[in-house]
Amino acid sequence: MLCLVFLSGCASPVVHKINFSHDYTPTMVNRVAILNFNKGSDVAINADVVVDKFTAAMVGSRFKIVDRADLKKIIEEAKFQHTASGIIDDTTKQRLKQLGADTILTGTLHTYMEERKNNFILYAEVYLTAKLLKVETGEILWSAEILKRKRAKNVGEKKILKVIDRESEADSAGNLLDEIITEMADSFKEKKSVMEKIKVW
Image 1 (cartoon, one colour):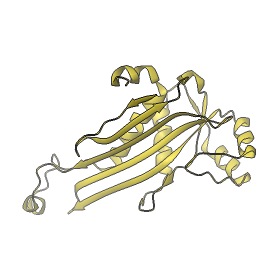
Image 2 (cartoon, rainbow, N blue to C red):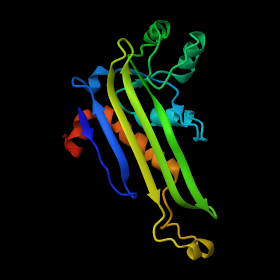
Image 3 (cartoon, rainbow, N blue to C red):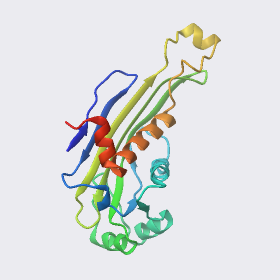
Image 4 (cartoon, rainbow, N blue to C red):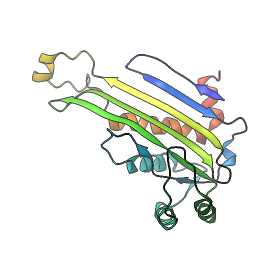
């Protein structure tokens, strides 16, 4: 079920898609293993940042999160190399189940960039895709794709050189990533409330 698609100007999200499987409800998920996210070739930040932010966004929810140290140990022991598809081998699947994980969250940080002049943010762009899969079957329960772009407002060359007006500055890539992950996490934590807000097509 496609819950939201927005195509708009550069000051707003230019891609915002959230999908659920037909039978998905938050009660289907108990313990989530957040795997390391892949990243685009031009992305300089460590993809662990995405895992940390998703973990923080899910604190206080009904979902439990598999401890990262335990998860790292399992992945290393099983010599597991996951791809963007999120497919896992039988050995890793069994080890995840031993930790009580019934779902995995993974994805790709495709773009994370800023354009600056004199430490003033002229432009920022972040593009993230993610999916939540059943450990047992590999079924995709939820997926999301969000691209956000922000430009500085009414800033000419002379103004940048002489006066730094922080109110005109674009949001940082870090802030955009925070917004994206919060929106994604909220969507699968509370499917009903999110669907009520955004009007299902």
